[in-house]
Amino acid sequence: MCGNPNTRLLSRLIIDFLLLLGVYCVALVVLPQQLVTTQRGFHCSDTSLRYPYRQPWLTKVHLTIAVVALPAAFLLVVELLRAAFVPQKEELKQRFVFVGTRIPSFISECYKIIGVYLFGLGLLLLLIRVTKYSTGRLRPYFFDVCQPSWGELGEPELRESCSSNSTRYIEQYSCTEFAASLELLSVVRHSFPSGFVSSTSYAMIFLIYYAQARLFAPWLRILRATLQLACAAIALFVCVERISTNQNHLSDVAAGLATGAALASFVAIFVAHLFKQVRVKRRQWPRNEQIYGYAGYYNRATYGY
Image (cartoon, rainbow, N blue to C red; front, side, top):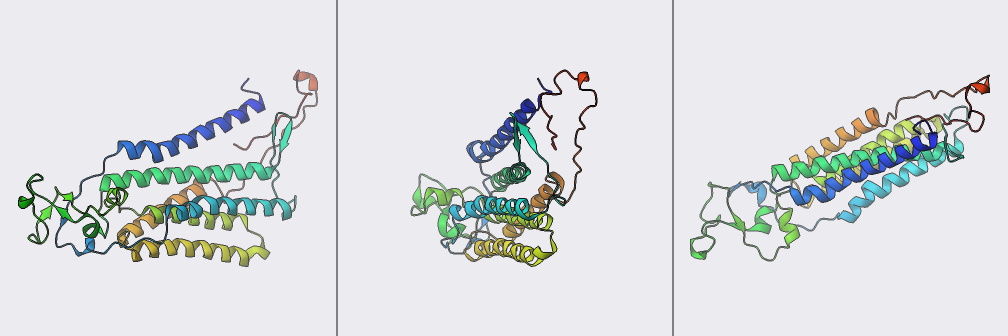
């Protein structure tokens, strides 16, 4: 049964789907419920935590568009253009056969490149989630949103604030600002690294690598450079936005940019093999068909996995 090409291809699809589902379930569902944010202290004289809170320009909807919708559309359009305009002698035509249906190389290439991209994005979300909860770094607007106080919780007259302590390091405290939402208070200790910058830089740098590898024709050189500059501009815009709206420290943005760039480079070069050309061996039809009792019924597909 394992020698059946249909069974092998179906098994591969199921394994890939379960792997992606497991990574995203752990990153988005399991870890937020199981991890506990590190209680990090502060100095009252720390001016880096006294910035006012500003409403961010970018929301999770914008992040989803930049990280999921835009890369998916970019990859699909490029693969469509390659399938339509690249001559057959210059394009490696790799096809799959499933239940007697020949699957064109366009579909298989889109499946592989999008699957690898989503897998790398899931790993990045895991890394961001674990790092944020384990470091517990306070955001620049910490004092404005939290307004911390410490002392005897049941005795308001015994509680202290930063007005009477300027150099003391405070580790056990509670927030007294009741106007702030619970969601805002929950992320006030999740500054390092910047999740927006990490995710966006991963997506944009992966697209830069992808455009360099796929849009290789000389007449596409200007278009390729324009698209790559646009991707870099989007990543830079997100970095500027997180700093200007006091959402993250400069070091948080730098760490997020480095994390996204490093993971995107690893996935594009060593996992997706965008710059590696692999020769696909085609099976030769046996001269004596009597050797295999069922060899005359179908052509066995060649798999590049």
